[in-house]
Image (cartoon, rainbow, N blue to C red; front, side):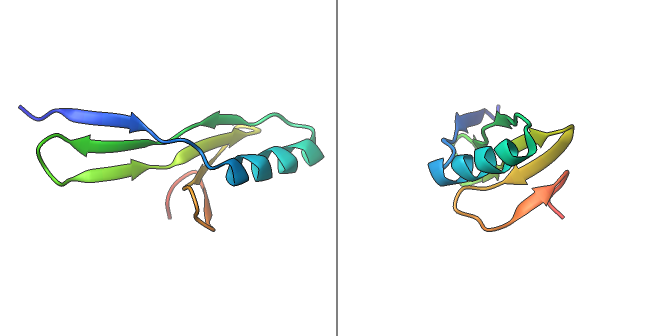
Amino acid sequence: MLNVVKTKIKMDDGLKNKIEIICSFRNTKPIIHTGYLVSIEYTNICYVEPHRIIIDDITYLAFNYGINIYIENLT
């Protein structure tokens, strides 16, 4: 039996501050869902799920310490 383990990742404070500053200029409130580290027990397989930021019904994906922000998907 494979057990999937999800561990919550803390969002970087710098990224969170940038998002809040940008949203304050637009007078909107972001909805932030932090990402997860998803791994399968007893294997070396793991996946980093990005942070999801929802602003005006548009989903943005971001990773800690990354310079890219993705819109709706990772392409």
